[in-house]
Length: 149
Length: 149
Image (cartoon, rainbow over all chains, first blue to last red; front, top):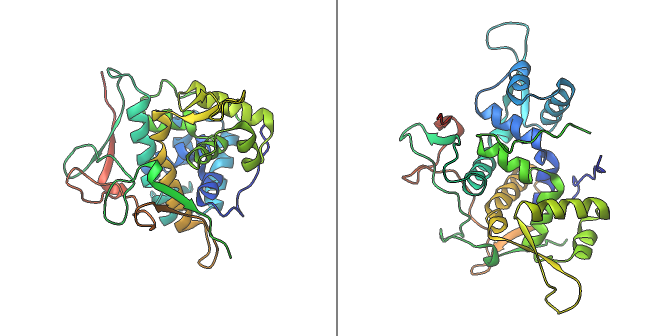
């Protein structure tokens, strides 16, 4: 198993972000949570994931404040998992992953699920990085500045 | 080691995307490539990653058409790694990870690197999912439609 190096003290926000959610299963659990899944058994059925791994990923997501444990909506003894505000803010990352996947990982004739907005029933606009004036920024027009003390 | 389940045949573009890049190291390698790193030794030094793991991740990124091997720019025998078009299209995902990290994973007084555009030297705008009219779409205003045959 690859060594797990933590980037919790990294100055790079990308490094910290991937440390928290840069794991296949964590991202798919979050995706399912956006799709309305709340219960352990539902995540398990949908992801086809071993219980111990699902359990550990859910625990990590709760520890990182992305999911929180809430009482079952039906008043039963089963608790549920709900996205926190920090978790809901991952929406744009899921959308960017989805759009990249749609564009690059499907053959033209291949079926794939689509994300629509409830008001128009149409696919969302393609996300694009923009500058303060709204102009699209390409990778070569952006640079990282390391902030020093 | 968690079982590796492939989502290559999944209908969900998010699942396919995380299958290809949903790995801490792969995302950080791509980040470094955007920062201008091209050589094995530079990736290794910057990421502090074991050679065999770096080697395997680079091989996967090349196999998935995200990086390509190109001759050394200085005419030396060392080859280099360059982002393909598919790889460059990951820019928006890196920006979304960075913005989420900036917002949620740093204390107010904590230093972090920033991504600026070369024209204004200012941070990029916050990425937000929008509908066809340009209105911001919240998670509850979006739904996944499974496409059936």
